[in-house]
Image 1: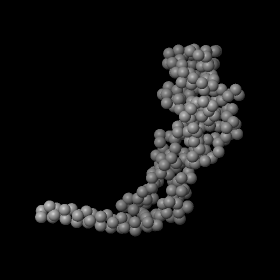
Image 2: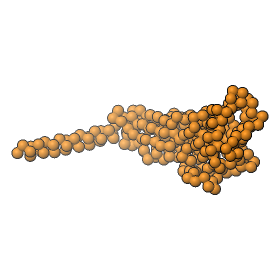
Image 3: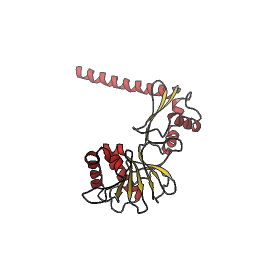
Image 4: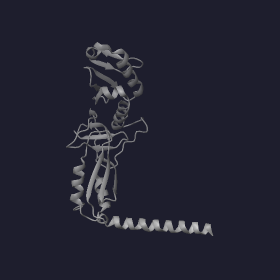
Length: 259
């Protein structure tokens, strides 16, 4: 008898809880939106989008948000607006019990800015996604320019395949180099620009020093960067930053410096 009473009590309690949750949900859906918030996580990068501009675009396309019942806000339409923005990596839309309509956005994080021979400017992130440079905002990242013939075709999922180094395009080669640079503390602080010369080989322009780094092709990339890091740490000396005009990494097991 006691066991039946316990089971019955739990059944009533759970049923009551579902009724209460249903009441809260119904009340919440009829609640009027009192506040509209857009929050942007810049992913440790410079801003390429601004929350107020995103809000303004949504309001233009959705008439109004504040003062409208939460159930009447067209969330799918808002998702479509956000999905068209190439600077947005992800977006989370949610409401709370106070009647606030919230959007949390994560911005894409570029690691390199490409300027090709057509003067097109576009970013690539670490996953290999290509997206256009903003005409209003600038991310302080590596720059690659010079003899880059490949062009950027705008698309939501324009991703470079970098699984293999064999037969890869100039975009893939630049991305491989950019990844190696940003993932090394010294190189990330020192290398400012990747230049593609007329022979399709790479030259690196440093932030500190007057020298040009002759990198050559992409072959043995890790070995070349290892040599460069060791040279900066042990071989260049105090006078070397101003002494050398060129640091050549093309030769195996050695670095050739010229004045």
